[in-house]
Image (cartoon, rainbow, N blue to C red):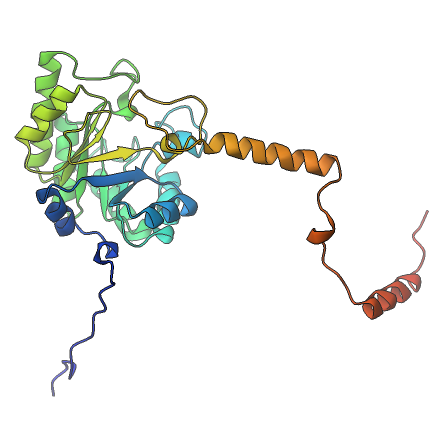
Length: 306
C-alpha cells in the first residue's frame, strides 16, 4: 500500500513574494541580480519585529549586543549562554530575514570541535540560519572550514574585528597600507575558499573593499567599507540613535530614539511626582452596589492592632 498522499499539498504564495523566508539561494540570486542586500543587527524580540516589519534581508544577532543591551564595555565578556538568550529572542520575533548569529569570543578558538559544538547550539537551540566568526588568520579559517563541513553556513568577518580590537590598536580603520590591504584580500579569499557564503568588511578604505569585491564570488557586506559591497549592515542602536555619542564615522543615524526615550521617562517621572499621573481616565471603576458591599465587609473586619 502506498504511503504517498493522494494529492499534493497546496503551497500558498503570498502576494508579496519578497516576504518569503530568505534562504541562501535567494540571497545569491539577489546578489547576482545586483540588488543590494540589507542587513541590520537585532538583540531581542522588539528589534527583531522592527527588522521583520522593515523587510530587511539579513539580521545579525551581533556580539555588539554585549555593549548595546548588556552593558559590557566591549564584546569580549559576553558569554555563549548570553548570546544564545539574545538569539532565541530574535528568532521568536521574526520569520522572513536570514538570521546570522555571532560566535562570541572564547567559544570557537580552542579547537574545531569547540567551534562546531558552539555553532550547532546556535542552529539547534536558537534557530540560527548561519553563524559568523571574526578574523581571517589560520585559526579563523580552520574554524570556518570545520563548521561549514559540519553543515552550518558561515559568514566571515575581516577588517576591524571588535573581539580582537586591542591587538589591532583599538577601534580604528584597518588595512590602511598596501601590505595590510593585501593580507586582508588574501584572508578574505581564504574564507571564501573554505566555504564561507559571505564576508563582512568592517572599517577599511573603500579602495580595499573594492579590491576584495573584485576578487570574491561571494557577496560582501560592508560596515564602514564604502558603497562597492553587495550589502550594508548597521548596528540597530546606532542607526536609531539608541545610544550616547554618534558612533563610528560610517554611522548614518536615521532617528534619535535615545533622546525621545529620555524625554518620555522624564515626563513620566514628573507627572508621578506632581500627582498628574495616574488621572481619572487611568482608573478602573466598580459598581456602586459592589462598593457598598465592600465597605460593609471592611467594617466587619476586626480593628487593626495599634
